[in-house]
Length: 116
Image (cartoon, rainbow, N blue to C red):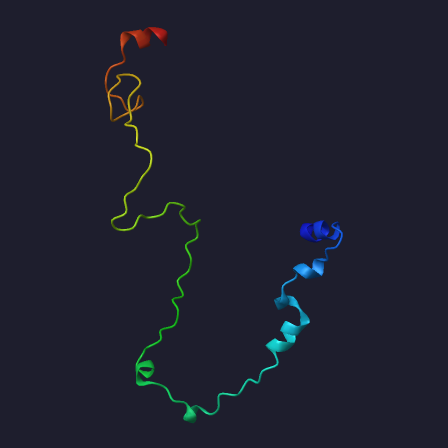
């Protein structure tokens, strides 16, 4: 709509010049001008043996899972994954790695005990 308004404000331009020929009446008439021949009786069909030997299974009727699909994509085989390096968890009480203050088994230092 915006493009048509912009073209209409320019002198000497017509919006009909910018319409593709696929959307015009001649294209619609040419689409249905040809003859469609019927395919005939089944007994007259020539079907190759390799097509006859194929088994066509119906599509699987698996229900979609009831939750939202995952946003994280699984990497392909041999694909290297780039991204942020993960920072190791560090306890704010004893400053050691691998756990946090809530699960720390070390005794509370005296300086922290005096503040609380």
